[in-house]
Length: 254
Image 1 (cartoon, rainbow, N blue to C red):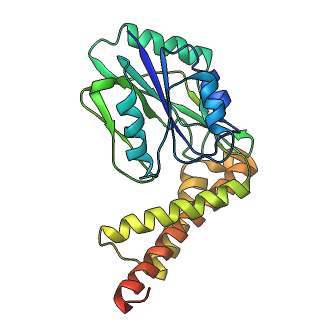
Image 2 (cartoon, one colour):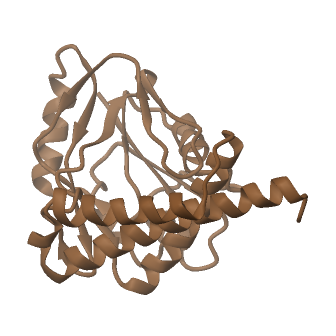
């Protein structure tokens, strides 16, 4: 029984070392980079010779499949560069691989931090994600941003969380909002969906209520409020951008 850990990266020198140190015990580590200009590649090569750089970035799902295609282990563990494995999770992973029963893949909770606080509510916990599977039993969807793992077989569930430093400061979050809202709007536009200003306002307001009230974000203190506002902004901009894409399509503007 061997484990391959796969990671995609781009300019992640601030978080990659912690990620790879936490899985240095694995039989194989595969890192696929999409054009880093910092020390990401150098750090990756301290842990593995299996480091590859691609000339393009086709999206998170396709890029992760490139990494998956280079894995050779019996099992695969997929991590983002800002995630890491605790000793307790390592023990549970090894136990699951040794005695999986009829399970071909496993989900695990993800404990994410926002501006230094590990969130316990707001829809961020327990946030189950599929990260461990038999190599032949799953692949990533082709989605550009919000990719998912498509599993052939039964899923098991682990108890120990994978740790995730999601957002370190608001500047980073604003960059993510712009990127994610643009990507989602483009995807919706390709699917033929349309939006209006009222649509954007309604989705933004609902995102705030869902995060802060229904998902008890108020129990996460000031960070919970900040996250609710950010979710509202992300949703608003997603549909506002979709509205503008639809207008360009109608008027022929470029």
